[in-house]
View 1 (tube, rainbow, N blue to C red):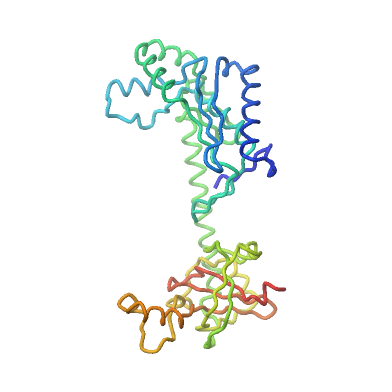
View 2 (view 1 turned 180 degrees about the horizontal axis):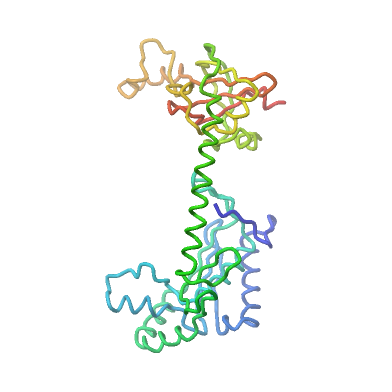
Length: 349
């Protein structure tokens, strides 16, 4: 997750307003930044929350001659691993992206398919311009290769010319040969740290192997489940308990009640995605409709399906601890707190 909030983000600005500000800033960039000399842009709103920036003209050719050389040698090659644009071209495009994203924010979490941005940015060169540039490079490949080679920066560690530079902590512009050992050392350290954390977590979770269970029973009404599920901590659910961010399940059956000590409650509420034997084979939906089995639901007639649904309920496990808010878990048979809900009485407090 690369969350950010742009330095010029303003919730009161419409997408049209942002487009105007981007145009103004690009005009200023043309005046003061040599990379932008002779550049022309199209900046417009696309759809309800997207901005399209198209480069119509520019004062230099940003295409990477190494990529085009590879294509000339093998037209069926996609140039895998070779940047599409030269370092100078990437600097130009990244500056445009920086200008636009100053008005943007990104709070997305792709692991749970959650997307939240101020706008989506579509940035690229106009098709006709790009075709013209590629033809120019292909016709003068040796000249462009030499020009790019002459302009390449030197790695501050080994002094070699760098086509695709890397930054590592406070070290900037490194070549891959110099940065790869640093990345490996960091990753090895992170793996070792993660291994220790897993071992420590397993020791802590041993305190939840044996818990006190009492039978549940009876159907209750109105349990509220936050829309975003699969949170690892109870805090992650509490943050969503405001109007419009949860749905209400009207018929719920408590299969069993788990009574935790204060220490066990604290551990469980911070490890909800860990599997526990006492949550196995719990959760899911069933029905009290007589003679209608959930296993044969899709074999039932439409009328029988409606009867089954009218008498259906959600099965949960209730988690209680003296002095702590009770909550309900629907593992859906997976053995971990896949869905977590709260009573309406708790929400009203």
